[in-house]
Image 1 (cartoon, rainbow over the protein chains, first blue to last red):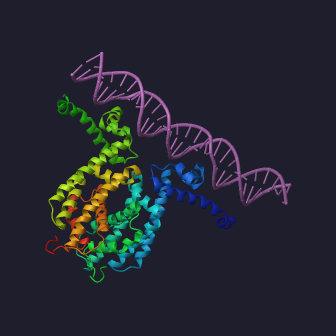
Image 2 (tube, chains in turn blue, brown, red, green):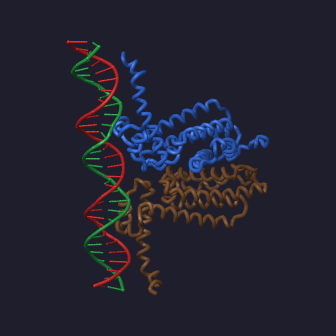
Image 3 (cartoon, rainbow over the protein chains, first blue to last red):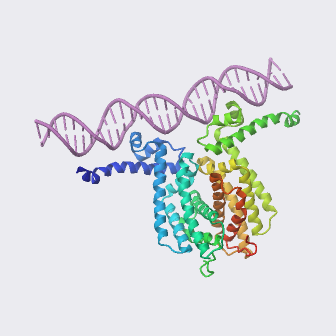
Length: 210
Length: 210
DNA sequence: GTTGGGAGACTGACCAGTCAGTCTAAAGGG
DNA sequence: CCCTTTAGACTGACTGGTCAGTCTCCCAAC
């Protein structure tokens, strides 16, 4: 089986090209947005050729979707892990917010693509996005419903609250993408978490504030 | 001076065409987004002609900006009025949220353009948008800072809170644009206002809840 | 008959995607 | 060991279509 050898030797080069294309595409899309980006930009930035790009991808759209799906999957998985070892509303919210914020901070270009570009992309792009957001809403909502059941917070429209939270987090990250503030982004972690918890009626012990 | 007569007689027809073009443009942009929209779509939808469109507007971009600026100015003005007659954090927040939500509800297509399309449009489009958002942040922040001074709410990062609020409101509207829920949108008014107030540590009197 | 508003055919730039062909490296054969 | 063959990664000139914006012509109202 020469395959085993190939798996270690040859594919390195092969995957390298694909990776370079994706990395450059992320740069270009983040800078110009999907529609203003031209495939030749990606070609130039990646130091490959148009042929190479279309050897690995079927279309400009598919490059975009690969980028977005890969990243979304990564974040979703990290979220799963981070939350898995948390118990109780505070810990869960802290873990979720920290994972999201730190991830966006570490992947600024992808953050811009996911938060700014993706929503405005064509209808074909929206299915996956809405599904993903729904998943995130369900997770957050789960925390809240459990907290309500446990009497930790008053009964309320937890679905709306979950959406409001996502909007709040997204906007904080968007501000950072646009203005660079705050620097570093994860400065918002503590106050933002406090704000979110407080919004659903969770009363932080006065001592813990500040 | 025939001008005075023209102002009443002729311009009616003239303004009517311009108005029709703008209205159709709003429809088309809201449905397809700026880049996927084609000027001929607007021509067709407006029942005019390409000549008419380029008689009234310099470019596709300018049509978009007209739409967005007009609407933003309207909303900003309504906001000003609504808030002018409010005193105290609760009333101010209620007035702001109600004005925004009701306005978006009444102008679904424009809401989509402003909230979804505008952020992803090219850099040339962003100056005005950021300025406008900054203004809104300042207003909200003003409420919060005053409430802090009055000892109504604890000291905190009011700028971040203002951004979080805008994000929350935007996301609630975006959900409505994408899924139609809640129907009608202004159902969220009371719970959303409560959530926002609560997030900054304003404790609603238990009697007032529900 | 002049003019301002409008119609719509047309132009030219631009760009996603294709394709005929090159280059490299490894396999096979003598 | 060469030398040939083959596969498959990669190249970039090219094509076909699209679309913003222009230009010429028209007509209705003075």
